[in-house]
Amino acid sequence: MARSGKATATRARRGVRDAEASRAAILQAALDEFSSVGYDGARVDRIAAEAGLSKPLLYDYFGDKDELYKAALREAYVQIRAGEEKLALDALSPEEAVAALVMFTMTHFRTRPWFITMLNTENLRHGSSVSAIGDRREIQSKLLVKLSDVLERGWEDGVFKRRAKPLEVYIMIASLCYFPVSNRFTLAEVFGFDTSEQGLNAHARRATEAVVGWLRQKGEEA
Image 1 (tube, one colour):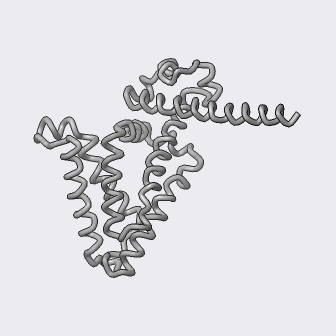
Image 2 (cartoon, helix red, strand yellow; image 1 turned 45 degrees about the vertical axis):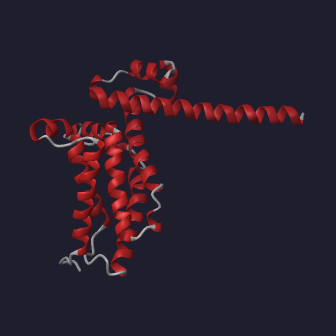
Image 3 (cartoon, one colour; image 1 turned 180 degrees about the vertical axis):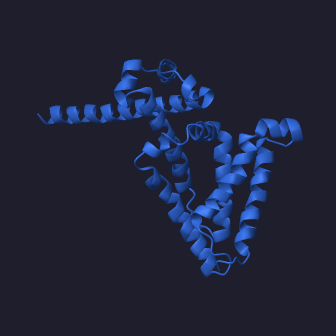
């Protein structure tokens, strides 16, 4: 009897793992599809095939195309926030923490081009799907809390002279990292900008200098 109960529990755990793996495969395939051809061009059957699962099973997990797109968009935010969580910003000095966040942001944008494309797609849709993600603000709040702590420590230590808000700083960081990746092809062709890993990392270092330099300056709000 005990053996039977143990076997049932093992099968249940395996079932949970299989379901989680299936969901993860579908979401990644969806991110690749939606970012490659946009919302209108995306096809659920291609997503299912890429994930190695049946179309009916995909619908069982996520429902229709719109719900799948919404889930993929949410996953895009979850993944970047999860990566930021691993930075352990609280263990770094304020300036080092800002530098780490800038370099991570650049690396994430560069190595996961679907992230920027998903944002572009959603903005073309006027944020119609992201507004329906119930926990969207909670997902983002983790980073803002950590960044708030970094800025507060910098202020208390006298390293940062500007009383900046975490959202202001993050928008600066995201903007500086976003443009050279989202426009990498035209920048390379028109200006000869180096969009290799080395070139983009060099830009990230310049972006760090710009953000840290701004924080070091006394602002009107101080």
